[in-house]
Image (tube, rainbow, N blue to C red; front, top):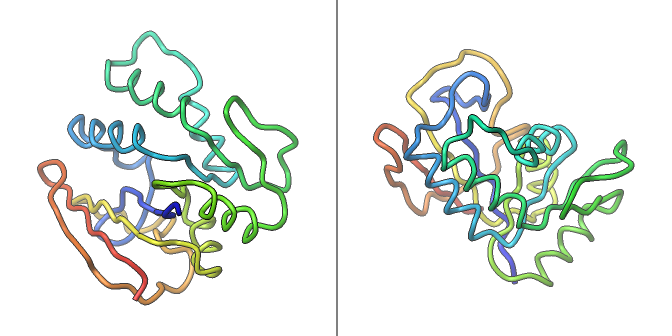
Length: 176
């Protein structure tokens, strides 16, 4: 049975905004390795459109960016959207019955399935489908933006904390 994991980079005041701060090269390498080990990823429409950046090959990319793009392209992706009519390579469109679709993936696959995006994660939290939350805390304060938790924070239990890259801490929680 697969585990559904929601993790994102987050400011100290709880916001996720990849345009305001980005991972260091060391942390980026961590994400490359993590992506290589995934059974797949589940995206909402907006996050999927952001991640489609990795479908392109840009000449200015460093080796780690090329490695991430290759890992991202290889893994299966499921895109939850009512507005999209099609999705790109190695992706499947998920329409209405989110609980059945993601519950089915959990039952059929082994390993970790990443969830990307706070709104989608909140929907899956409400359905009781998220097995683990990973908060990558960066030492920045944004003051506003999109919060990591799109709704009420679920009851959680801290299972581990570790320094990933110099000044970034990963806090790993499971539902309490």
